Image 1 (cartoon, rainbow, N blue to C red):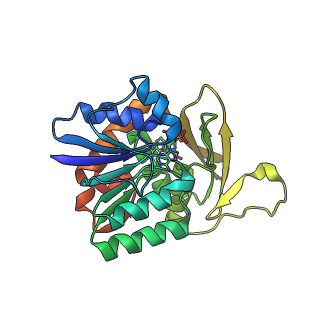
Image 2: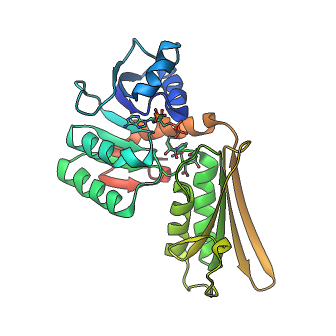
Amino acid sequence: MKTIFLAGAHGKMGLAIQDMIEKQADFSLVGMLTTHRSLAAIEDGHGLAGLAAIFTTLESINTKADVWVDVTKPHVAFANGKYALTHGYDLVMGTSGLKETEVDQLRQLAEEQGQSALIVPNFSITAVLLMKYAAEAAAYLPAAEIIEAHHEDKVDAPSGTAVATAALIAEARQSLPDIPASDALARGDQSQGVPIHAMRLPGILAEETVIFGSTGETLTIKQSTNNRSAFMTGVREAIKNVDKITGLAVGLDKVL
Ligand SMILES: NC(=O)C1=CN([C@@H]2O[C@H](COP(=O)(O)OP(=O)(O)OC[C@H]3O[C@@H](n4cnc5c(N)ncnc54)[C@H](OP(=O)(O)O)[C@@H]3O)[C@@H](O)[C@H]2O)C=CC1
Ligand SMILES: O=C(O)C1=N[C@H](C(=O)O)C[C@H](O)C1
């Protein structure tokens, strides 16, 4: 049996994860961190209220679990991750937007505390495959740009998936592309030398396109997520297998 503490339990991902947990015979949700604003949703009957303890601050938590799953917001995720790793939890961090320095600090904490941590930029299998194929292509095609599109509520940009994809491309390519210097804002934000263009629109959940350019040809790799159910197999596998990680790892592929 895996006991789980869910932070961000009444957001869009949190509610979907509660449903997923309820269907697993070997998972038990023991605690949830949420906000005062979300208490209304709980009163309206959303989620597993009554089956797990609900907390609204880190200081008030008085329960323990094997795994802390975080699907909150970028400005609170680092504090949550630190709390989890220093209070006996393994950590599955789904929240995007952590800074590189924060990831480094969480890695150090996981090592010091003997806990396991998995940061998952994207729980969907198509996104995991897109990142794998993009890294393979980058070894032959160094010039690449990323276009990501998300729903209008997403607070961080570029997306965690786009930043992770850029890191994989940067690591895999053997030469640097010749990107002409430009002050034009429309050239996107660069992450590790890979331009990323971000869109936020109603009607879209999450999409990523990577376009590689070469002499007289291009290669386009694209994935689309249309429903949050696409993330749930990945969340389940991350919870089941996070304890196999030593220290901190990034990417769902590390537990698949
Ligand atoms: N790795 C992946 O595959 C995926 C990652 N994500 C990421 O997961 C995160 C959540 O996404 P989503 O569910 O769509 O966003 P939501 O805004 O719907 O949910 C976030 C929830 O966290 C709550 N929250 C805010 N502050 C705290 C806090 N201090 N403690 C506990 N809960 C808090 C929010 O409450 P309130 O509204 O009151 O502020 C809200 O209910 C985002 O960073 C997103 O990028 C999303 C999908 C897939
Ligand atoms: O906020 C979202 O919705 C998503 N966030 C993650 C990201 O930043 O890449 C994963 C997925 O794209 C959905």
